[in-house]
Amino acid sequence: TSCLPNDTQKGNNDRRINRTFTQTAATRYGFQAHHIDGDGNCLFRAVADQLQKPPFNIKFSTGVDYHRVIRHIAVKHVSKHKALYQNACVGGVEQWIAIMKQDKTWGDQIVLSALSNALQVTLVVIRAEAKQGENSTIYKPHNPKGIICLHYKNGNHYESLSKRSPMSTEQQQQWEELQTLIVKHRSNTYTPPNGHKLQEIINENCNEIKNCTTSGAGA
Image 1 (cartoon, helix red, strand yellow):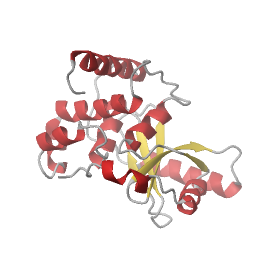
Image 2: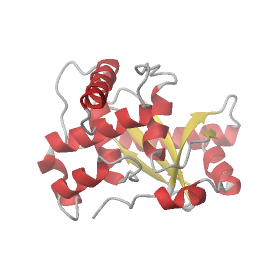
Image 3: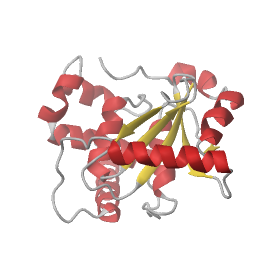
Image 4: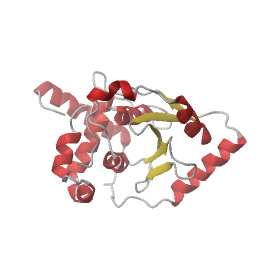
């Protein structure tokens, strides 16, 4: 299928942090990488970490695993808009949903696109091992409400990124060039409904996770 395998047996490998790659890719744009647990949920944990920081300042409900909420949002969005993603799901969208809803299943590009659309934020993925000028992937929705920056390294791990302050002249230049790429990047084809409010989306999905847990159903 198009999704990555469950990494339950590879947790130790995920925790092998290549700090050289991390600092080179992150600092080039004036970013600082923040450690995220490598338990199969790292993409979802990294997005949740970003949402809790400025400019979003999102609050998650107590008693709910933040990464479960983000995974739930991605899977639910694909479930509601199957036609939009069916061509990207090699094994079929139903199979993708069945696999991706499981805890510790690695997130993939479909997840990134779905989260960008569902949350209405631009997702920028900085790849550690790629060559300069080829190391950013952008997922841009219509009328984005902000930018989430993630760091992808070793082919299996995501981290959360934040801007350094102050930045060097070179870093500021690289950041401005990245901003230009984001502005010029073509938006996703999905058009969200009116009245999009990020905190309300998070609250709704937190409650759905709580209800699933209470009823014994899977999230």
